[in-house]
Image 1: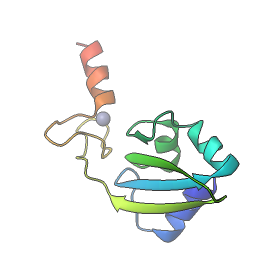
Image 2 (image 1 turned 45 degrees about the vertical axis):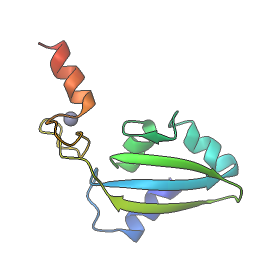
Image 3 (image 1 turned 90 degrees about the horizontal axis):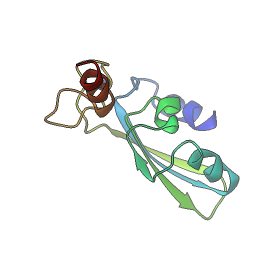
Image 4 (image 1 turned 120 degrees about the vertical axis):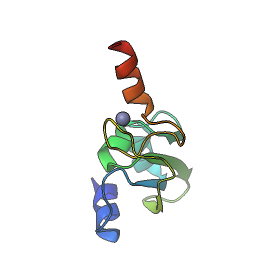
Length: 104
Ligand SMILES: [Zn+2]
């Protein structure tokens, strides 16, 4: 996967799920990415999983190819899964919240 290669090439010290990315892509590549993420911004999507980031903002653009912007995640580390996906002020991410709630 090109985007992932690009991400970890440009930021070799990035740990999984500690950053969020803004991704602009065009043409077929955008369609391929869109297939992995149904909404423009997502905290949990196939694309987040693939890139191992805590959030992806996906934007369409006219030109082919893609640009990638990497920012430090604003999220907190989830106490359960250790990903930076918990909403600030909460201890668990929404996925773990569901798991915990359903096992209650
Ligand atoms: Zn979690």
